[in-house]
Structure formats: C-alpha cells, structure tokens
Length: 67
Image (cartoon, rainbow, N blue to C red; front, side, top):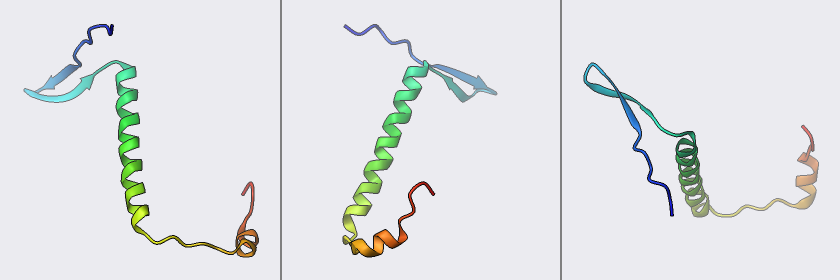
C-alpha cells in the first residue's frame, strides 16, 4: 500500500498564492511527465512531415564524429 501523501504547502503573499512546497520526488515526477508530454507533441508534428532520406555518401561527407 502507498503511504498517505501529504498535500503540497501553498505559500501565500498578500492574500494570493505565490509558491508551492512539495517533496522533491513529486517535483521530479512532474518534470518527467511534462517532458514526456512535450516529446509526444514533437513526435506528432514530426509524424505529419514527409520522410526525407539522404544518400549514404552525402551523409558520410557531412558526418563529423566528436564535433
């Protein structure tokens, strides 16, 4: 069973919420989820574009490993 999660603490200034304090693991999980969402959006855009291929010779002319 999962331990009961403590709700995040909201910092209020002048009667308005200005910041949130939460566990670092929760913050890291949020960042990971946001990154995954961005990746999915990027992938969706790329899938709409036609594929373009280069000839191997052209790729090798441009390829500069370690640069």
